[in-house]
Length: 168
Image 1 (cartoon, rainbow, N blue to C red):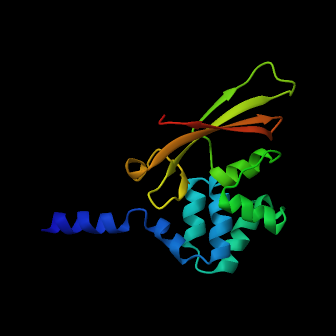
Image 2 (image 1 turned 45 degrees about the vertical axis):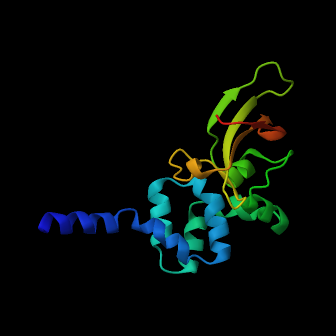
């Protein structure tokens, strides 16, 4: 019985800090969602364990993350949060909108000094919601559609976005 209780308590406590995301205000959730890709697990844990919005905002400023998101005009921040990545966006904006790519490869022969293709996978939920697929996805099996997008970045600026149909 004691072992059962220890296991049960361990399960309840595991990744408990991630549950705190639900307690963020809409504004806080938006900048957390956008900036989480730049934070290691320890930083996300520290951020989410803080009690007040003021503490969390100060943390983002101390980690030099605040301006990464708030340097953009409100309408651009809204597009980032919505994941509406567009040609002309900077590399950091794509990270904030879609996270890290599933795959990446250099592209030789383009006019830019550095050209790279980022590949993102997406799933469409039964309710029509489009989500960036993650390796630990527990919803992909329910998806009504799977597709990928190839993002071409020339010198860290989005030059093209191509959608590819079908399962990966």
